Image 1 (tube, rainbow, N blue to C red):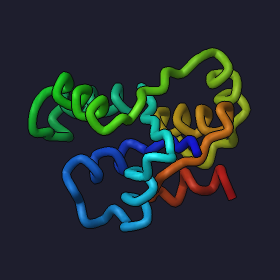
Image 2: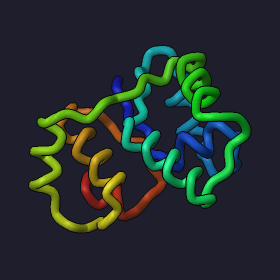
Image 3: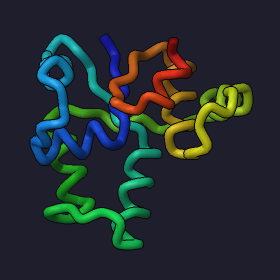
Length: 123
């Protein structure tokens, strides 16, 4: 199955945060699943690093290497995703989450998130 992980899930997974559910970790590590992270998440991480709202051990290059090592693929957003974005209801104002939501819908993927507002788009 194809899964797109939300930014906070990626960050929790990287640092081994205990807020990540055991089931979520199992899904991410299941070799039968393909795990994606949106390039919007990487953009969000870069912005938060640059304004001091986030600290990571290592660089963005290290993060990219980690994704490669864990076989987490970066999903670029495209015009189809942007078209879907224009039709989304405004449950959420966060532009990064809205791009992620549109990618999940356009690509018929499953989302891995702990964000209740994001979950509204899928219930």
